[in-house]
Length: 400
Ligand code: NDP
Image 1: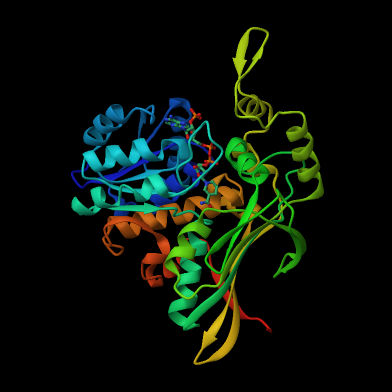
Image 2: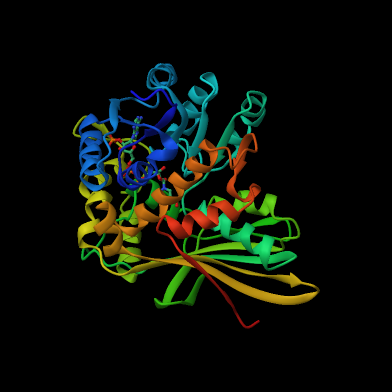
C-alpha cells in the first residue's frame, strides 16, 4: 500500500458506486481508496466496476458500521486521512465517534436519524462540534446534492449576486422514468420516511408545520418543464436558516408523479410504511424494512431510467438596495450518468459532491474545524469542482 494517507469510504450502495468511481478519477488527491461495507460482495462489485471504468485498483473490507470499536480498528488499519460515510444516516454517530477517536476527518451526505424514530436533525451531530474542533478535525455534514450542493449554491449567490438573501425556495425535480409503477430512487426506507412525514418550512424565525404533501406548486423547471412539486421538510432547512443571516423564509419542494403518490398513500393506509415491528406468523418484522425487500433495488434503476433531474435554488433578496431574484441549478441526464458510472442521476448527483467535499477537506482547501455545514465555507472551489467533475450549473435572473 502507498504510504500516503488515503480515503476510507463506508457503504456500498448506489451513492457509493458513484463516489468511489469519482474518488478513483481523483486518485492524485486521495492516494489510495478502501471501500468497506456490511456486505462484502457489494464492495467487490463496486471495486470491479471502478477497475473497469478507471483502471484504479481499490482495497475492500467488511465492516458493521454500527460497531464503533470495529470502525476504529479498521480506520487504523487502512491508514486514511478522511472517512466518507455513504452508508445510512443511522451510522452517522458511530462513524463520527470512530473518526474522532482516530484523528480522522469525517464527511457524510445525510443527517443522523435514529432507526426507531422517523425524525432527522443535526442536534446530535452538532453536539460533537467541540470534540472535532479540539482535535483540529473537520466533520463536513451533508455533502450530497440536497443537502450539499443546494447549500453551496446559496452561499455562491450570497458571495456573488446578493447582499442579503431574504427568500429561498429549493426546487428538486427528478423527471426520470424507470418504467416501474413504483420504486424509490434512493434507499426506500429513508426516502419513504422523508416523504410521508409532515412538511415543515421556516418563516420569520419560526417553523410552520404542514400535513404530508399538503402544499403543491406547479413549477416550471428549466429544460424539463412544468411539474407538480410538493413542500417537504428537508434537512438543509435547519442549517441554512441558522447560517444565512437576514433570511426571512426558506422552503423545500420536490416533484412526485401521481403514480408515486397513489402508491405511497395506499402503502401508508395499509400500514406498510410502519417502523414499529409487527408479529407475522410468529416472526417480528418491520413493515417498511419488508417493503424495502420487495421494491426494486435503487442501484438497479440506472440502466432503465431515462430523462433528467433539475435541482436548484431560487434566491430573492437585495443587491445595492435593489430587489433581485436568481435561479441557480444543475441539470443531469440519467442515461449520461449511467454511461459514466453505471448509476442513475439521483446517486450521481449525491456521489459527485460527496467526493468533492472529501477532496476539499482532504487537501485542506476547506479547513474550518469542528462540525460544519457546506454553506459555512467559501463556495468558489466547490463550484469550480462541480463544473469539472460532471455537475455543471447555471445562474439565471428571474422576473420579480
Ligand atoms: P443504499 O441503501 O443503496 O446503500 C447503503 C449502503 O450502506 C449499503 O451498502 C448498506 O449495506 C450499507 N450499510 C447499511 N448499514 C450498514 C452498517 N451497519 N454497516 C456497514 N454498512 C452498512 O443507499 P444509497 O446509496 O441510496 O444512500 C446512501 C446515503 O446517501 C444515505 O445516507 C442517503 O440518505 C444519502 N443520500 C443523500 C442524498 C443527498 O442529496 N444528500 C440523496 C440520496 C441519498 P448492505 O447492502 O449490506 O445493507
